[in-house]
Image (cartoon, rainbow, N blue to C red):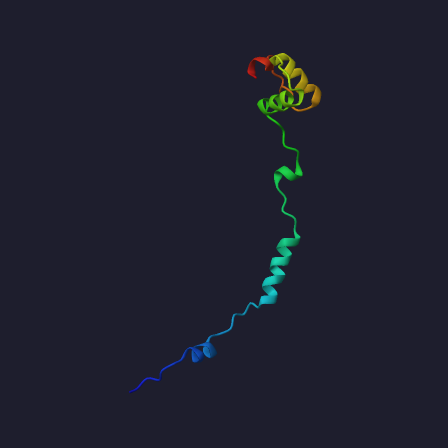
Length: 92
């Protein structure tokens, strides 16, 4: 029995069409794009570490400071405060 040869045009005709259309795919993409991506950093202010706050203060002042002066400046500017530590200058 001889089999019938198929051409690419024949297979294209017989291929089932996808049930999802381009329009529904773009609607899903638009819905995802319209919802803002919220990250923990964007919803709450990130707290600086003692070392990062010290670097920021030193960068702003441009001079040298002792650790006690740094701790005072960081607290005064609201960058970092000691979590009830008695010697934060020794920790820094």
